[in-house]
Amino acid sequence: MSAVETRRYAGKVVCITGGSRGIGRKLAIEFAREGADVVINYFRNGDEAKKTAAEIEALGQKALTIRANVAQEEKILSMFEKIRETFGRLDVFIHNAASGRNRKAMEVDVKGWDWTLNVNARAFLVSAQQAATLMPKSGGAILALSSFGSDHVFPYYTTVGASKAALEALVRYFAIELAERRINVNAISAGAVKTDALNHFPEMDETLKKLEEKMPYHRMVEGQDIANLALFLCSDQAEMVRGQTVRLDGGISLVLP
Amino acid sequence: MANTLSKQEIEEKVREVIVNQLDVQEADVKPESLIVDDLGADSLDLTELAVGFEDAFDLEIPDSDFGHLSTVDGVVQYISQRLQ
Image (cartoon, rainbow over all chains, first blue to last red; front, side, top):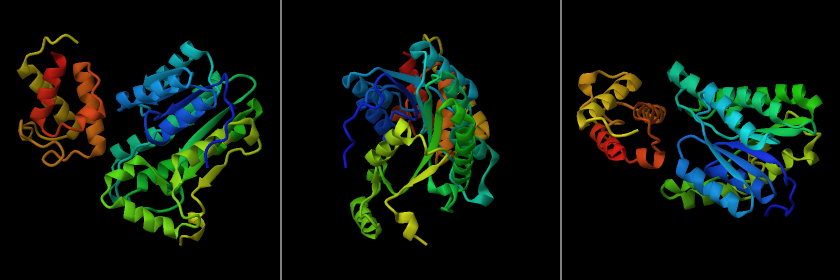
């Protein structure tokens, strides 16, 4: 199903971490399509960030690319300072950037733990604090992208899973604390997402076909599904959905053991 | 950054970054060493290495370039070209 053609974000400024490619890029484009000016944070993919920015500008919206390693507090603070200088406000902040060193629990090292927690969870803490100060009195929205690893066990997913659990907890605390300021905070936990990254695996078409047969709705979650939910959760229409981690998986988590 | 560094200075800086980031012995870092297979870098190490080289040479090295560099000498050649 394609996005409903509305302009819920006209005149608003949206910042997306990890916004140069994949799901972040899709979010950036869809928010722009609904009228938002978009800040695209990137770290290692400047060329992709420029392409995404050009696409947003072709939609008639402003795009600002900011390179920042969100594992570093000072880089996050500089990013928000640049947003303040450029737009003077922020209406929606989305923490999509994620990273991790995949190891078994007994093999997790402190360096990998620190990196993963810093990018996936601490960056959200620092960014949400900054974003809230830039949001107008009329309110705003903060959204985090989580994963099933927060409450399920996947091979080698130890550190990322723990970081996502921390992220979801932060979402709940910010949601309550910022409710009085009309800032809504939620998370999306998407599973079985079809992204371009899967194209790199051999025989993926056949594998995906088999997986889709097992799914209750017989298709994978796509970037557009995540964008549709994000556009709703960050809008006034979702004002009574607060501090929630919404599963977006076509129902697969209900039938898996 | 203007290229005021000689090839040897670039090599030395590259080796220094690798030794610091990967915690390997300097003697093990040879021009033909494969960064992943010989020096044991994983994906996080590669990110940190790229950032280490960027800081050392005041360059932005996108993943689209860095992903093609597999050996120590490959990194030296790439940085030399970028600094020209």
